Length: 167
Image 1 (cartoon, rainbow, N blue to C red):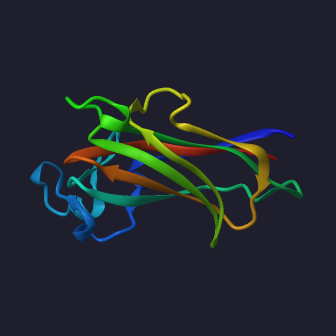
Image 2 (image 1 turned 45 degrees about the vertical axis):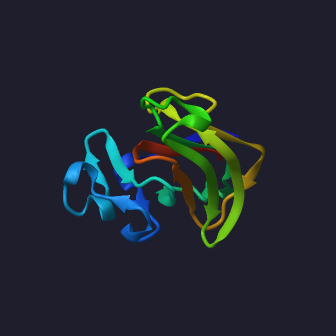
Image 3 (image 1 turned 180 degrees about the vertical axis):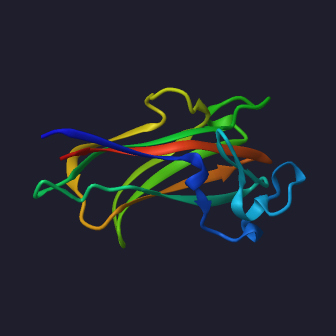
C-alpha cells in the first residue's frame, strides 16, 4: 500500500456553535466571533472564560484509489492555544480537549480527553498527531471536530489539518 497525505489550510476551520456560546470578536474585528479571523497563517478564534466550542474541518478523502478502499492511519491538527502568562497544560488559558473523527455521518473515533496547549503549528509532534492503532476504512469523506475549552479569556489559532491514508 502507498501513503497518501491530504491537508487543508487553517482558514477552512469553522465553529459549530453560535457566537452566543462564548466566542467573541477577535481584536474587536466585526463578525470574527462567527467566522474567525482568517489570515495568511490560519484562522484565530477568541473565547470567553468558562466556555467550550467545537470547531469543524473537512479533509479531502481519497475514498477509493485504483479500486482499493483507502484506510485512514493518522490525523493532524496544527494549532496554537494556551500560551500566555498562565503557562501550558492544565493551567493554560485555552486547551484542546479532544478530536472526533467522522466518516460522513458516522463518528469513527475520538482522541482525548487531553489538556493540550502551546505552539503546535510548525512541526508534527505528539500533541498534534493522532494515530489510529489500526487503520480504518473510509467510505464517505473525512471530517474532524476539535473541542476547545476556554479556561480563561483566550485564543486558539488553527494553521492546518490533515490525514494520512493508506491507498
